[in-house]
Amino acid sequence: MHEALAWFLATCPEERFRIGSEAVSSAKTACEMSHWEDSGGIDTLAAAYAEVGDFEQATKYEQQSLNDPSLGSERRKEREERLHLYQLRKPYREQLDGTQ
Image (cartoon, rainbow, N blue to C red; front, side, top):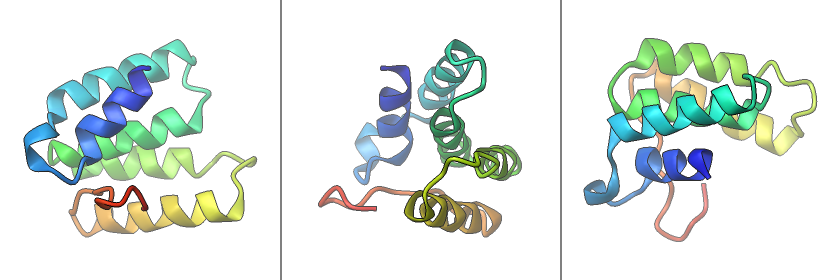
C-alpha cells in the first residue's frame, strides 16, 4: 500500500496529485517494511526523491534497485531509463494512458 501510494504521489502525470514529500515518506516506510529487500520499493523511493528535486538520492536509489538479479529485461530497461532521467535531473512521469 505504501509503495503504490508513493508511486502515485511521485509520478502522477497531473501535477495537482503529486506531493513529493509524502511520496518520500511513504516510499521510505515501504522500504523499511521490506527490510530494504524489495527493489520495486527502492525504485519508488528513487522516483519520490526525483519528484522533490533530490536527484543525487534519486540516482543512488535507482542504481541500488538495479542490483536486483531477478529483474527481467523489460523491468531493467525501464529502470535504466529512469536512472538516465535522474542523471539529467529530470523526474519520471507516468503517461496519461497508464503506460510508462
